Each structure stands twice: as C-alpha cells, then as structure tokens.
Image (cartoon, rainbow, N blue to C red; front, side):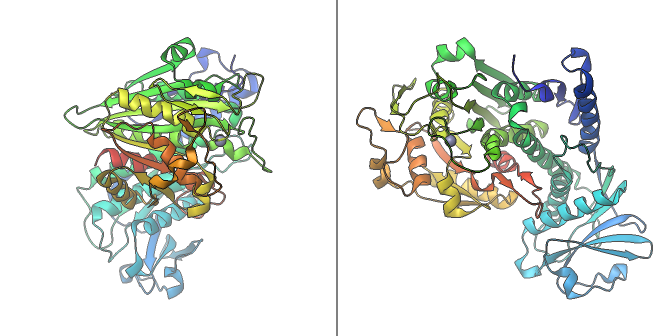
Length: 521
Ligand SMILES: [Zn+2]
C-alpha cells in the first residue's frame, strides 16, 4: 500500500459547477483522528473556494480594499491621503472613515503601473480582510490607468483568489477565512457587463491555487499515484478525458526514461495524459509538465541543509494540471493535451546508476552521467509522446536547473523556443498573467558539451557553465522536426518564502495561468 496519499484520495474533486472538495468518508479510507482532521480541512477548503464574486458599486460601511497611486486623493470618498499611502510597499494601511474600514494599498507611480502591481495590491487586501474576520469585502479598481476595465476586473478577481489562499491544513492553529462575498467596484463609473472577465479571473485564480496545493503537499502525502488519482478525480465530468499509464502497461510502452528515474522508489512512476480537444479545427497543442514528486538527486545525491522544497520538483506538472483546470472550466475552444511524467528520484538497490544507458522508444540512446539531471530524462519521454500524438505546438515546463535560477533569480523563468512565433506567444501570455519569462538562446555550439562516447547523447554537460542552456539543448533532441516548441525552466519562481506579493508563502503555482493563456492564443 502507498504510504501517503490518503489526503487526496479521500476527497472528491469535481468540476461540475463550482470547484467542490467533498469528503467521502464512506469509502472508509480514513479513521480516527485523521478522519476528523480531513473533514475539518475539507469543510474549510470548500468555504475558501466558494467565495462569491459579483460586480457592483461602492457601499459605505463595508470593508473596502482601496488601491491608490502616489498623489491620488480619492475625493469621491472624502479621504485625506498623503503620498505615503500611494507608495508600493509590503504592507497596507487601515483607515476608518465614515463607518467604512478602508484597506489602503499603494500602487506606486501611475506612470510605472502594470497589472502585477494591482494583483499584488488586491492580494494584500485579501490577506488583510482575512485577518479582520469579515464576511463582505468590496475591492475597488484603480483609477487613471491605461488598462481596460475588463483586464482590471479579471486581475482583481484573480488577485483576490490567489491572495486569500493559505496552505495551513497541517497546522493545529490556523486562521480560518470568514470572507464570503467579494464585490468588485469602480468609483469612476459603471462596470456592469463584465461578468465574463470576472468569471475568467476567478477561474484563473483557482487554477493557480490548485497548482499551489499540489506542490505544497508534503512529500509523504503526494506520491506519483496520488498525483494521478488527483488528476483523475479533478477532471471527472469536466469534458476532458484522462488516461494513466502505470505498472506493466508503462513497461510495455517503454517510457524508459521515466521508468529508469523512478526505479529507486517503492512509489512507482506514471505517465498522465489529459485530453481536452474541445475544438479539433485548431492546431493540436501539448502542455508537458515534469512531475518529480520528490528528488533527492538519486546516487548523485543532493547536498543541502534542507531539501524539503524538492517536493516541489513537480512544479511543471502542477502548472499543467492547473492550466487544464482553467481551460476546462472556461470551456475554452482549444485543442489541447496535457502530458505529465511523474515519479520519485530516490535511492535503493534498484535505483538508476551513473553510467547507465537509457534506450528511448524513439530509438535515441542517452548515457546517464548524473542521476540528479533526471527531469530531462522524464521530459524526453513526455516530448516523444507529444510527437506521437500529433501535437505540432508544444510547451514544456519544469523546475529543471539550478543554473537557470542562478542566471535569472527567483522572479522569472528561462524561456527557449525553436520557433520565433511560439516564443513570442509565450512572452505575450506571460505579459498578461504577470508570470515573468526571459528568453535564452538554443546555442548550437554548446551541443558538443552533451557528447557521450557510448550513447547518442549524455544527460549532463561536460562543462561547468551554461547548464540551463545545455538542458534545453538536451530536450531539443526529443522534439519533432514539425513541432514548434517552447521550453520554460521555472526552478526560480517555483516558491517564495514570504507572502509579499500575490504569491503567498510556499508554492507560487507559477505557470498554470501562463500555460492556460498560451493555449488560448
Ligand atoms: Zn534532480
């Protein structure tokens, strides 16, 4: 029996109507204390996700999130604000005025405004309202920006859902959320008719929350089969179909990279396929995610003080699941397949050894020089599958290299593309969702660094530098000639250790909105 996973298997994730997390205790999976804990959790979580969003007008007396620019006075409300209130900073200012409690959040200089500043502001407001324990909150749109009301309403709903989320289910003492109704309002006129933007924003936020939840789960609660079960339940009755290959079937299909990496764990690997071919007249797009539910590095053991973050080495898989959730909930007219290779990179008597050769099902051979460069070995199989399924547009996303993080820091991903148009589409999508990417080259001259004397290619560079680029070059070997392909290395923005933006402490859920937006473009 699997050591973990009850946490997810005990729940029924359903896509019919609102996202509901219903405890199914009758399955008899949990007993005693755990049962009680889970029931409590699901009740709370259900309430969290069932916040009710509406468009409306400002009403005195309700807690109101008020975003302001430097120098803005908000005359309509009779507030006396100083430049201090408009400065973008890591905290909010409470203001009681005429019976209304204002949560004033600075947006900085109006000339430097971008949607992410509003996303952050609303998330600060959501966290503040949660602390206050109120039921109803009004969120005002910023005034005087160049953005459409549609984009601002979308961003408000999205920012609220993301700011409100906390991963505290395993803490005895937690701050329960009381907020039920959120009204998005504008001081400078009517915002009726923007229900679609409101709904989209909310669903984008929920997709990100799902990705965060999957990543935040402790190692022993989120094994490869737990992820597979989660996906199966999430997309029940959603319009998407799920196929899961594991055990003998996986062996028969010879996903040998995935199998080799997963060999050292008692928790076996799986290949997950989520089909949402809602408009077959469109080009087939594959979203490919790396799903290492834990990575100790294998025999090339990682050396670090605290490796617990390596449970988030499934960040790409979480992004893929979140994106597919968004697309199905929107009933988006897309032709998309999500592909996830999931396993654990551990050590035991059967674990993959340095010096091994992996023979891929497309005939390519790879020599394993370093067992910690395992993500690319798994992605290679997923990319082969995308090709076999006939996807002509592919984006893969993975927490792939420390080198990428060292180059670009923790607030953006590396982007590589073999086609200018597909790279541009990713950049445009990232611009809209505020999930930053920075393009790096597929520099042919570095291909030599992947030379292997005994196989077609090695899984690790013979040099010390440019590791993020050589990883991308490795993956290119498994991309079809007719495939327009982009690769996103999200090792940097995988998680944050403080709640100082729309990303709360822990997993950021990076990539769910980016992939969903990409698929629709
Ligand atoms: Zn690794």
